[in-house]
Amino acid sequence: MLSKFRSRTIKQHFLIWSVTIIVIFGLFINAAFYWIYTNNIHEEVNEQLAEKLTLQSLYINRWLDERSADIYQMSRKQDVKEVNIDHMQNDFVTFINNQSEFGDLGFVNTDGDILVSAMRPQMRMNVKNQAFFEQAIQGKMYISKVVFPRITGDPIIVFSSPVYNVDNELQGLIYGSVKLGTISRTVQSVHFGRAGEQYLIDGSGMLITEARLDMQKVYGRDKIDTEILQRALADSNEDTIYTNYRGEEVIGSYQWTKDRRWIIVAELKTSEVFAARSNIMWVFVLITLCILVASLYGIVLVTRRVERPLEFLLQGTKVLKEGHYDYRIDPSVFKHAPVELKELCDTFNMMSLKLKSTVRLLEDYALIDALTELHNRRYLAQEGSKIIEKCIETQQPCAIMMIDVDYFKKVNDTYGHQVGDRVLLHIAKILKLQTRQTDLVARYGGEEFTVLAQQTDLEQAILIGDAIRKEIENKPYIEEELHIPLTASVGIALLPFVAEADLTVDTRLSSLAEAADRALYRAKQGGRNRIETNTDWIPA
Image (cartoon, rainbow, N blue to C red; front, side, top):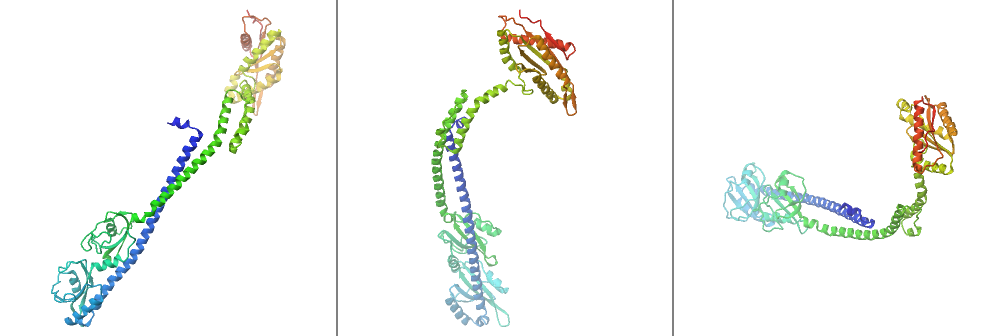
């Protein structure tokens, strides 16, 4: 799979990578927008819900205070303090007719008997076991939980207040009942959109007001147990999306009413909150696709201007590979190419002009010893054979000298190889100065050097060799505090003028070098710093 990808053209690479980058970038932008938009809308809705709940809580608390104040004011009337039943009956009926919030208003004596009821004058009932009676007997104002009267069965909330006479003696209590439907109308007067709902529940989850969007839930009778109730009981500030009692995902918030009596819940369906999100996302996707198409078109245009010049460059490299180093590309091909490719064409043509000479130079360097900058053994074998052949053809004498630095290993062991290298370079400079331009000077290996002198007889060779030996002896290597005396041994062999048919030119060179090497060995054995010749070598 990887090999197939690597073998694609530049156009295919451009297309693949461009599509990949644009798609990844588009996904990143869409994902970032989705996340930012969702969080912003979520935060905005939570802020709106919190503001509405604050206002609603103030409104409901004020409503409770007003209803409590109504009952308290009735308990302060003179007829009520004097327990004037006839007058109380008239006052209560008048109050109910003028006050639409209450469904009934009555008076209960200290024994728990209902003596007066505005809406049920003939009702006789004892409420001694009711919580509102017990609180009033203790002298407390009271608002009950949801109560289901045996007479009607409709859920109500009872407001009560103790009644005292002028001597501050407890005479009983006055109560007023409010149907839950009254509270529902108050709460439902404010809601959030078509999918928004606001309702009251108590700490047990009992619905105090009707569910506007779920008529199957009956206020005062049904309980709910959802995430928002658990948050309220725990006083949690969590605002994540949850599932409400209708099984729908909603964003919701809560707030407790006065004395933590009820919980006001406001919820808004996520389907309404994020209704515009899908449309906006489709717009972003469409924009991404448009950018992708436009980019692909642009890439095709660019690659057209790049591919053809690159084909010529590729062809040029193949020609150079075949050894045609002076090949040039026609600059007109790059007329409409990018500036970088034009420069690349110019550079290629300049390179092709210089490449041939550079290759030749490299070939020459391959025949040069890197340390001493003398010719190496390879060059000696290559050019020395030509010199031997010429001398044989012209019947001219030819001598070879093998020169070896005495005790050079001791120099390396004493001063190190770096100093030893500099000593060899010093020797090489002496050889260059003490030889002629026609002489071939080469490093034969290690501390051993060779001089191939054409048109040189034995006497001349000895003079050249002795001059080299004396110069090395008279010019020790000096470097800062170093003073290294040097000597060299020289072995000389002479090419005879007899050309044997069974000896090739290469064989004669190697045999001549071998003869000079034997002479060098004798010079070493004879005490070093001397010259020995080998005149015994005559081809058989």
